[in-house]
Length: 300
Image (cartoon, rainbow, N blue to C red):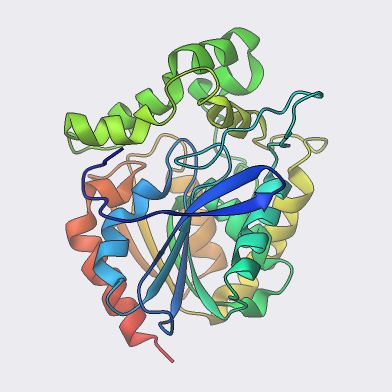
């Protein structure tokens, strides 16, 4: 299968018995490592412009989380073989396993988007010294801000059985994000690249499970991890951080951006009123050179 502007040869790694993770490993083996973590319902495709802009000098590691992109789609039923538990902790463990497989111990630059923030900062809890720099795009690493209402479109999948059925049956979440996640009109083949990998009941499982794992209450299983990373976030204020934010994001909006500004007051911030959730789709022509300049300026 070919995807626009994605001239890469994905690799595969058995991250758990019988379950393979697809990932990109682009750039010189001895280059500084940039780990790019996508969210839901995207995949490594979201990072393609940044990989293309950095791989001549930097080693870009970009996994597709299990159930996402080109990775395997295991079931989570009690009798499934192999079985996968679609939780934040599983994602963190998978990232750790991949980096160990590649012999990458850090320090590295962490690039995050959407759920990638929770996965990356959750992974960093084990040893924050492994993180040298941060590239942050429309994400979260703390609970839902008090001033932010939980969007109804997410509640449809998180809390409604009918909504969950519709998401898996008609791939509503990935299709909707491909249409509504940008201010720029995406070409048909780009929208298809984002959403097509999730067509079909089995293929859409992770897009729903991610929604169902969103921590809102104290007894939600991801909440202890999210609270821990929120407490740790200000400790990264002494490290270089670059924040690129699409202000037309109905989920990760100004409330989330304000949370990062408060925790990382020295960060270089580029907030754009004419960009949406997929900020690297809307503004990659501007942001990729700025991100590269930031990395070169903060190297060593």
